[in-house]
Length: 78
Image 1 (tube, rainbow, N blue to C red):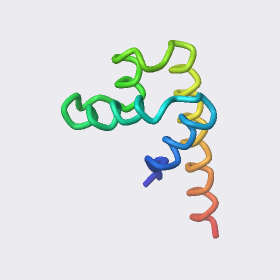
Image 2: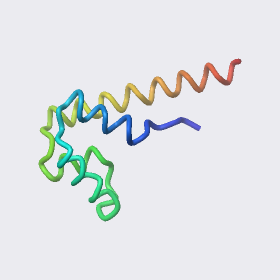
Image 3: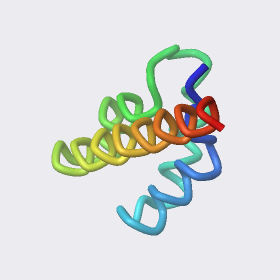
Image 4: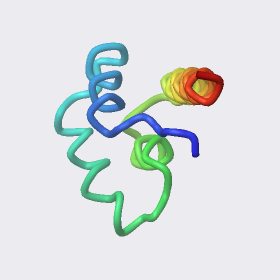
């Protein structure tokens, strides 16, 4: 099974790399359950990130997924 990045790591990325405010992150987390949409889409849907920032988020998530897959493959070979 492939590990997904945890919320803390994702939130840290949003705050440090994209300068997303704690208020915006709070909005995203409050709408997580009711919207049942991926967190990046909630940010975009509510106008909390630009399209460019959304692209950066998806690039970051893709990179994290690739790193997790590589780690998983290496662990399986050991």
